[in-house]
Image (cartoon, rainbow, N blue to C red; front, top):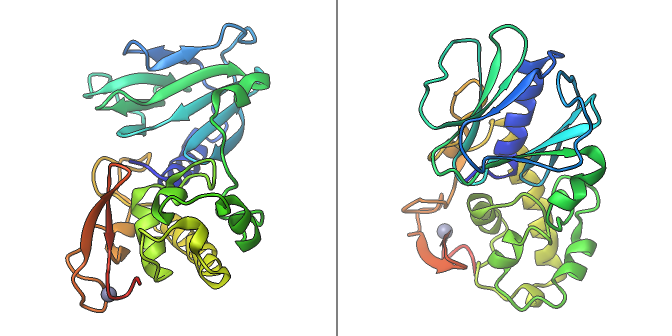
Length: 267
Ligand SMILES: [Zn+2]
């Protein structure tokens, strides 16, 4: 499932590829993938993209027509830029036509992904409550202490909660807790100030490193040029047999997802 670094990589790729070309058309090839708000500002297209924004795992393309496209990749969604006539490509659920034969295909095997077309004024109504961006200054140990104050859930689950911090998913939370040397089952509001500092520090570090490596391709995730990310080579516990120090990695279920951690390094 694409997390913040993957979504950020896709957004940067889109910006580079679209490069001022107007979006001329949006075709939906699968029922339910594209959702239109009833108050769209007409005419919707053609419209240039005036701003490329990301909030958590959501891509928001602001259009010159005062509308926006909110794109949520969910489990298996991919945005692939192409100049070839490959509409028959498998699992294409929607496509954005640019200039000439340039297009962005929304490919999604599991079909949970969505493209919401809305006036800019209604964007927030389509987003869930999202906590601060992990790379923002707002996300610091003071904020985290307050946010976790009443959370008796395990820290692993708390960090997956998008209303606490936006954009983190299973892979990066496993990696962050390994680097911070914290057991994923630790009660969130029982963490010491020193441990909270470690979480903030390593969250910023892991997310920044993953963006610089174009994200993690373990299953479906691809960049807009269909290339894989490279951060999977730098994972330390996620889906590993041993941690970098050679201890066996343990796998447990938390909130329905697999947590990987080292019982020796992460007390
Ligand atoms: Zn270890």
